[in-house]
Amino acid sequence: MSVTTRHIQAYLLLLPAFVFLVGFTHYPAVATLIDSFMSTPRAGRAAVYVGIENYQVMVEDPIFWKSLFNNLWFALATIPISIALSVAMALWVNEKIVGRQFLRMSYFLPTVLPMIAVANIWIFFYTPGYGLINQFLQLFGLPGQNWLGNPSLALGAVTVVAIWKEAGFFMIFYLAALQTMSPSYKEAAMIEGASRWYFFRRVQWPLLMPTTIFVLVNALINAFRLVDHIIVMTKGGPDNASSLLLFYLYEVGFKFWDQGLASALTVVLLFILALVGLLQFFLLDRRTHYR
Amino acid sequence: MSQHAAFSSSTQPGWLSTIGAWLLAIVWVLPLLYSAWAAFHPSEFATRLAWDAPLTLDNFAKAWEAAPFARYFLNTTMLVAMILGIQLVLCTLAAYAFARYEFAGKNLMFSLMLVQLMVMPEILIVRNYQTLSQLGLVDTLFGIGLPYFASAFAIFLLRQTFKTIPKELVEAAQMEGASALQILWHVYIPLAKPVYLAFSLVSVSYHWNNFLWPLVVTNSVESRPLTVGLQVFASTDQGIDWSIITAATLLTSGPLLIGFLIFQRQFVQSFMRAGIK
Image (cartoon, rainbow over all chains, first blue to last red; front, side):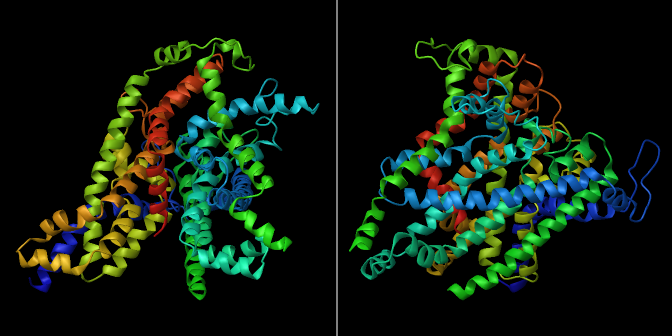
């Protein structure tokens, strides 16, 4: 077969997938960037170039800043906690623990359930008065809280749900990595008389680094992508206390139909994801030193 | 000596670890246990645990009648099957090209493809919605699926697998005069079966649970998937009858949940396989 026909064959094989990839990832990303410098088209009035006006509106918009900081807080809270929990889960179910099957199933369960369905159950847990958490607190004589209705608690409440949903998913990757780890490390550590914690800190954790980077990148993307529970549980409230960037983008785009501002917000999200991409590139580069 | 004892107990974790592991597991299944309790008991027991509470299926019947869940089930099933079917075809072809062909711009195209791992279609909802309305596909199942037909994740996964398939097998098939597509069909695809299973489970559970994009795109019963249907049902004031809402919640997650409990091993292994790139 000639080289040219092979080239053509390759392009033909790629064509169908690339139509959709370009159509729904690359084209909209570029188009959004252009839209962010245009006014919102209204009936009988086409979009016109407005320079950085949308960005000015965005920068002066307190809800934007609120959502951005909420989102950073949300990411900083969910990521370390769910990574720590998932490592603990993986270490536990990797050993001969009592009820190992049940434990593994329990941890992984939230991953297969629809976020929107479980968010409904969590709403009930958080309900003031007769909600499960408040009933539990009452047992110890502690006052109940309006978890989702209190601006200083709402973001924490939805963060807990996200951790609950994600930790078991990340556990899988740690478990996979632990299972490929040679048992000779453990034997060596045993002979040396190393403590459990020392063995984890000096042997297992460094060897799990590539997995941690993979999980970290996924967790970062999820922190900016997952807003199902916000829509169901708090609608960003009270007083935007639990609004996240993508949630605010959804409101601006589909409740206020402000395309200009929505495009500027999308560009911010794309910028954040690009940073995550760079971080991954940088970390993966460094990772080779472990090999 | 004492350290040695401490260590050997780690293969069979100490009681403190065991208690911790179990406590965490109980917290993790609690939401599901609670919803099962509320859904199978009359509503007066929704907030109160009592051993003599009678069992009932009424809540499921009421939920089933209160919203067109049968239609939502049909929609979700069709949606998930359509997306998976098209993904498998498109991504197999693309992965084959990346794994076994040399062509100008290969690296560039590969990098462009990987962008989708970072920038998922959800992020670009505003612009993708416009594309969809220009195509006249708003409020259709096809429209919900469209942005997901090409999955960078699937292409990447399959390409990695295809690359591990020995050249000798391919050469043997070429000797017999098999065409490129025949080789793909008879050599590559059969050897990648476990990866196809892994990706299928991941894709089905992802799209069964997907919410934001379908929420934006749909506005009628005919095209709404279960997740959006459940949200519409739970948010229109039901007088907050928790028993009915939990019944509807269990209905929605039911098929995946049952599938998970039956195929637990495959599920966990699939997600593992999908994660190790």
